[in-house]
Length: 215
Image (cartoon, rainbow, N blue to C red):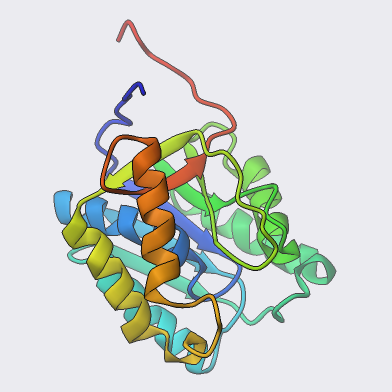
């Protein structure tokens, strides 16, 4: 296992197709980063759930997952499960996001995620953020689409526990789902921790990585 630091990011972009995607896939990473970097700017975009209970959940949750950050969150109203039919709206939102920030780090879904909304957003991100470090998070679900990640962010036990607590606290609309529980979230974090010699971790795919070994 080789560790390569990604610098000290001052600007982060985080995107999700649905409210709770960012928190599930990268909530521990955001907590770790924001606690270490007070004042970091986080531009977040969620494509669906706007205007209702889900948006309220998302705003409260991301505020908790990004303590002390300059959080700028946009939640749109695209219909859940129908992103391919609303490609132009999604593309315009991603391009607007790209136009207002120059991030050091981008957190986005995986391009091979089984959910069409996640996958579609991931493909948009690869064209809008071409010269950026993009970490593609994973979301456990019944499809069984978890792969072999290439990058890991170790999580302290406190952060891992806090992530699970915040997920349970801020997304009551999701508690009825059979996979939405403490065992699932901590179990995956424990497996990813084993893979990177840590207690817990979040894992990501990285498509391209430009090195500066002589800098």
